[in-house]
Amino acid sequence: MIQLDGNALTLKDLVQIARHHEKISIDEKSKKLIQQASLFVEDVVKHDQAVYGINTGFGHLAHVKINKNQVEELQINLLKSHACGVGEPLPIEVVRAMMTLRINALIKGYSGITLETILKLAEYLNENIIPVVFEKGSLGASGDLALLSHMSLPLVGLGEVYYQNERLDTMKALEKANIKPLPKLKAKEGLSLINGTQGMSAIGGLVLYDAMNLLKIANLSLSLTMEALGGVMDAYHPVVHQIRNQNGQIDVAKEVVENLKGSQHVTKQNEMRVQDAYSLRCAPQVHGASLDAFRHIFDIVEREMNAVTDNPILLLDENIAVSAGNFHGQPLALAFDYMAIALSELANISERRIERMVNPHLSCGLPPFLAKHSGLNSGFMIVQYTAASLVSENKVLSHPASVDSIPSSANQEDHVSMGAISARKAKSILENTRKVIAIELLTAAQALDFREQKKLGIRTQKAYQFIRHFIPFIEHDEPLYPYMHQIEKIISDESFIHNIFEGTDDL
Image (cartoon, rainbow, N blue to C red; front, top):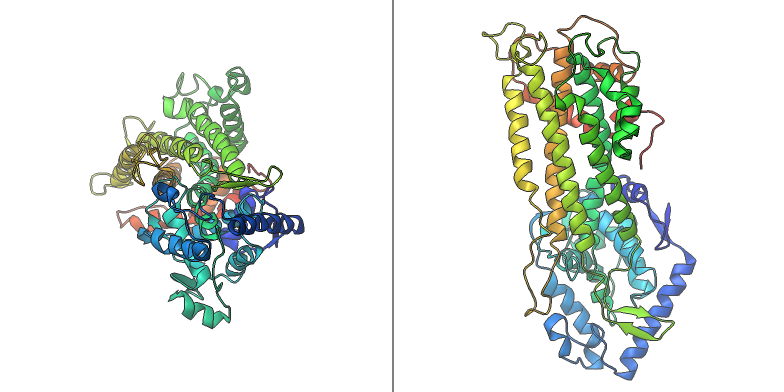
């Protein structure tokens, strides 16, 4: 069980909860903070002073005062009216991450939500009663309103959930689970539930975790390609990278050298040629820049995972409620656009290495398109086409969402982040990039089988054997898509990384 305290949640923890259904608890100190903040809200309602979101309307309607006997109805109406998501439902793992992140933000004691409501959300998470949340509809300020509204509806028995592998009306699922919904929401609780960045944080955080793992696999596919093409190792000399002063570059070069330790397939300057093309020689510079980007984004994401992101914020020590803008997703929107670009570059350079292996003018003696009987067989010709198509699609998707803004709520909310779109685009690019890198691994294994059987590197040998356990050498043309799909599935499983890189940890 992972204990949440609003301050120490890590991306690794989030993955354990989202994907591996680790249960959560809330620490005792946080419970006291929650109760103190909810008493503050009760006091505001009792004294009838106008405080945004507690006894006023929302957005442009903030000037409309709500009668004290209607503040609970106001919160339910907020969830109902804001649940306007469209598109496909988000994966269960993403919604589990959203629930975790929202709980972790609310327990810091700045929101005014009751302990009862937070415990109910935690109960749903622990019992795996997961709201159906539609992927599109967020502007990224005031937070992910539409997405978080769908997440919150089931707390009061509305909306739909996934339970025991079924998509059900919430009340049917709760009856099966013998769990009761909340009878009502108190003042500010609806707003506290939906006014935050946890939709984009959940989507983008899981993409980031996968991106950092995928980078290690990209370094591995690069290493296999170096062996397939007799790459020149002088360009990976540690001093070359140290004097550049870029940490990602230094670390990538070091990892590739470790991958290739003991290899008899790589070469030295003037052994076969003076130097390699950029896609081999400059790979540490390119992969390393993506690694530096991911590390920067990792820092932003983990800070946001432990942040207060709703509105208004209750400052109990000063006895005030401050209406501000912590729900604005700009820090994440920019970060996830950056992540999309960094992922795209991994695919761009990988596709160029694929081309070098299949192109007889560039492959240092390999048969055209890696076909044993070229002409009669087309071999891996169209494999490269597929990679090129994915790379081209990534270029379109890499256009930043964060540079756009559409005013909403009668121009009260006149600048928005589009952070949820940034996160979803990054997810699409991650999936495309994983496919390209899978193709490079498949291609490099095929290419190596045409080379003299010499010793591979310490890690590339493991990778080659792992691939060949599932996928044979392609001697005659046959449908290649099952192998392409299979190798993508192989590298999507974390066990692949654990088997190759046992004892290493970048997160």
